[in-house]
Image 1 (tube, one colour):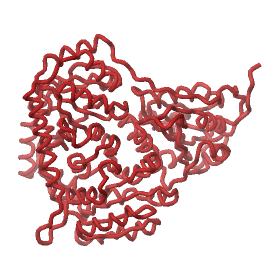
Image 2 (cartoon, rainbow, N blue to C red):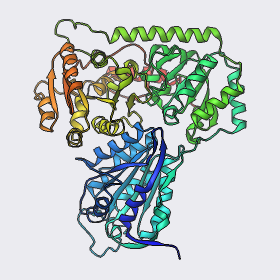
Image 3 (cartoon, rainbow, N blue to C red):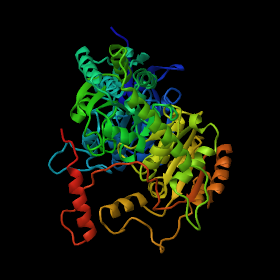
Length: 615
């Protein structure tokens, strides 16, 4: 008879997670870096006891907000290029539903996180329990059913032995490059405490393998035929280049075949900022170099990108080009109406390059790309150089970005900048310079305000030797800032730069661009100013407010030298942004309005729609 070990469901779950390993550059390491947990009556008795029992093998981290800790867990996985991850445990009710935004964010961004929300009693004996949602038409429903469309895999564990099938399935999804995303295992609080005689072999240490999928030969043939007929190809690097650890394959392919490279938000840092074939950012937040070549390109090679509307200019930017989409996920590979090449980014690029031996893009096109990239890099230097604002003008985001990068001579290789929503993603996409894969950490698939500080915590936990610089607007800071306290508590130093433009300036500009008046976005003069430094100090961080770029640089020097989390706040211009680059983005405008500005915007909108390629 096979050996067994009697454990509660929660004990078995934690023991299984703690035993998993994965190969990494530094050797074989735990697949799970730990478990974030905020305890409540739905998880403290079962999961709480199990996590305490295995705390040496699977560390438990207490946070201050369930959404925040899930965002930190997601950022941890992103910083590890999806090779390592974390679990997240909550109580039932609001503890569980606070994870929903994070689940959606992980799903959109194809990032792994294991969500373990508590659930109501399977026995139903004490129904309705505290925090239980009752569905008048379905007695089996709990709030955790809301995770079903937000999860790549969902299961509710109603018998302890169900872990024997549910956990391997969950790990398979979490580590599958094509299916990667959030997994939710709903854990009823009574079942967490039930015991079962599990096979001892179930807990034997196992090394998880992530396989690079080689694209099919017939797809490689079709892709090569398309490229051999191209004179002006353009490479668009997405997040899949980073997650597939294909940055060197991308560089080799670009150099060998003379193809300029542009980067999406998720793909930025796939190629060093100063590489001669680097054009910079693409799309709505794109550089003039990348967007100009995108308009002229006859073939766009999209590598590891979802081809989101910000990348394609709502399907207008590549309207004159054929699209070759190399993606490990077939769902993404067929986007753009072009040729699909289904496979790992590195394996796909190498297979293409081998078959394209001797072929290069038109020499004039390659030189056009090199010239455009060189001119754009010089322009970035000028935009972020020290300057004295005229009169009482406030500094803009370019001024602040330049100050951050000047504050450390090795910032292009040592810093990881973290951001998520508002105007900052556009400015950073254009202006941030990094030479290190992963040195640019942007959550822009879901563009989730409040990700920034929590995400920075996760990045620091994944990359403790890096200087993690969180750049965040005042609006996002006020939405979620509690993980500053967590960073202090866990001794995970962040440098947080708050750009205070007194409101939601990004949406305010968008509102006006479609003909609307400035309404419900900016704080008027009657609203009291927020002392962000004072607030950050109350959470345990060192902090200061500054009033000029020169003061900011000096403060950043103190922040870099400090032992713990340091917050610096500066007032910034709510109107002025980098005008260079960009392209059209579809935002629907009212068809009828009593405002002439809206009617004019609608006319321009209808004209722009004619440029969309729907196939």
